[in-house]
Each structure stands twice: as structure tokens, then as C-alpha cells.
Image 1 (tube, rainbow, N blue to C red):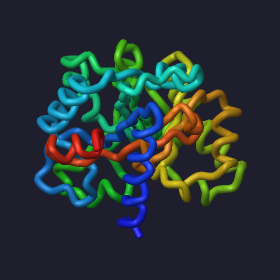
Image 2 (image 1 turned 180 degrees about the vertical axis):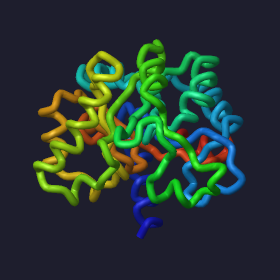
Image 3 (image 1 turned 45 degrees about the vertical axis):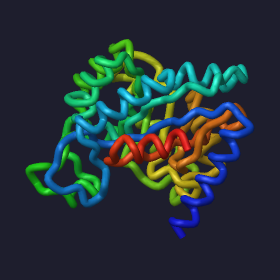
Length: 255
């Protein structure tokens, strides 16, 4: 099933690159070094720097706010790329930020809010060795990042629940609480949202309507597709990036 989905995505991307201006939105999770990565969420800082160096050579990294502007005005040039992180791990601040600064690369960090500043405790976090289990960003770190000229803070729900499993009322709470908590921390509007898990089955039209009604200007899925000016800005595609060498990374983006 997943093989079929991957092949279908590759075909759609090939067609879109042939006839449209496209933009890859990259999705990372943890940037760290671990002895074992059972969930494939971790990209090492060394690899991440190679990825960022590569995209700055072949693309123009832009913020999500600039992406929304170019999609709205149908002004994509075809050389843009965006960098995002999901869940809000502390290593995004410790290891990702210095690399982003080195290459002057904007990024958005989508943070969940139920365990800010605590030890990472999603089901998949417990699959890592205890000494290598991550921490989430603290309130102070989120505030520092939000004031950095390269970083935007986005919302990723409160408890990282699958929205399509929830009632409309519970979706409103799950999305709205995360937005409110983050806005109280950073003192500014949170404009971008990422659906937990991010496949087409993990959210629905109700989710998109709620996100729009709450004042977000964009929302992102995880389907491996390239974005285009005709992509729905409230279910804009992203490409999940795992630990990989530049040969594989370039194939994901350029082929």
C-alpha cells in the first residue's frame, strides 16, 4: 500500500514539475544524534547541514508567510523551498537553529502544547533509549525562537491527536487551545498550522474549516507531494525528510 502511494506521489510530482511551478515544503522532526532511531524521526546535525547547504545552492528558501503570499498572488517562481519542523523538540533550538543561522535559512517550528518544556512522551518517543529520549521546547525557548528573524512558530494541536477521530467540538478545542497557548507565550499571532500525522485520512474538511475560522492563514499535510499555486493553502503538501545522504536527498527534490 505504502509503495503504491509513494509511486503515485512520484508520478504526480513529475507531472507537476513538468507543467507547473512547484515548491517543496520539507518536514523534519528531531535534529540530533542517537545510537538507534527506531521511528526514523532523527536527522543528524551533520546531515541536516548538508541538506541546508544543498537547498541554498539550488533553491531560494522562503518563510511560510512568504509562501502563502506567492501562492495567493500566483507568483511562484519555481525555485522556492520551505523548511519546517513538527512537534517542537528542544533539539530544533539547540542544533537546528545554528545551522539555519549559518545559511540564513528561514524555517517554521510547529509545536504541540500539552507538554511544553517536559520530557517527550508521545508513544513513539518511548521507543528511543531513555538517555536519548528528547525534550520539548520550553516556553522561554519558544519565545526566543519566535523573536528570531528566521523563525516562525506554528501550531500543531495540543495533544497531537488524529483530528479525523474527533468531534467538531473536540477539534475546535484541540486546535484552538494550542493556538491560544502559543500566542500567549510569544505575544503575537500564530498564523500557520500543521495537521498531526498529516495524511489525507488524519484530518477532514471540518478540520480545514476550523483552522481557517480560527485565523490561521495556512495549514500543512504530510503527503510527499510538491506544492503548486493550485494547491489548497489549508492542506498544503509537505515532504517528510528522514536521515539520508545528499544523493537520495537530491533525488527526492530534483527528480
